[in-house]
Length: 362
Ligand code: MRU
Image (tube, rainbow, N blue to C red; front, side, top):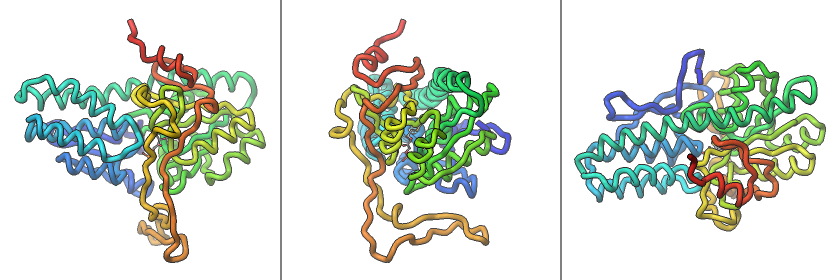
């Protein structure tokens, strides 16, 4: 996608294969800051502290982190230690483990001397596959929006939560990919963006992204979605996901479940954009089995923004000493999901459909 009209990705490898560049998403939307990560420790920090975030992007970034480690030491010990370090950088999005497992499957059988070059090749392949996957999600999601547009005049009203945009992937985004493709095809649409407390990925990232792309949008407080749906102002909800279980339970950014409940009560279709790299067939009951990241209470008690002088400052929202809790994800049961928009098409959020989705393709 583009920033100020110039093509950009949130992650790109240095041509010398000695570093990876990332947009530091903590600085958006007030500044576009690029960081150079040259060691596995730096990559681990960037994922843990959310310079990069979003399920597919943390997977691709971790793959480069492992490749950077192997460039210095490609022995079994160094490789396994680096993979273990990266794997626990964030617990919920399964793409992190998925990408590392894909790397290890290719690298473990190789002689040590061959590993560094292959590791970089595989990280490149993971990143490029993500772009292809997300473009396909957009192609499969587009007819959902076209069908709404065909039913009635006026822009298609989409609601999304958090940031499942190009900043959360290597390009296109997942939930935003159908939106970008509809916009490019000239289909009138408007996006309601949940601010997504406490880290405000909707306010600071999705609104910035859609603004850069010229997609009409309106930012709303997290609590507004149900009201908008009751008034008929939302045609479809499309969100991303961090882990989907074998029976179709969807783990995504905290607050997603409430939107799914409101959508069900108001007859609004609730779709989840899911690259198959986010499917975890090893888990079944999302509520009981998906590890939910608990982040710092400071993300709830404090908020950052730009002051009148242009400086980015953090302020305390609460009384000193207020106790806060910060579960970062929730689980939407499969029964509330209208469908999963994958790179292979739209499928039902149920076990049989997901098993068939993962069968080898001819
Ligand atoms: O905590 P974050 O910002 O990494 O959470 C991101 C989300 O929950 C996204 O919706 C999800 O990763 C899908 S990204 C295509």
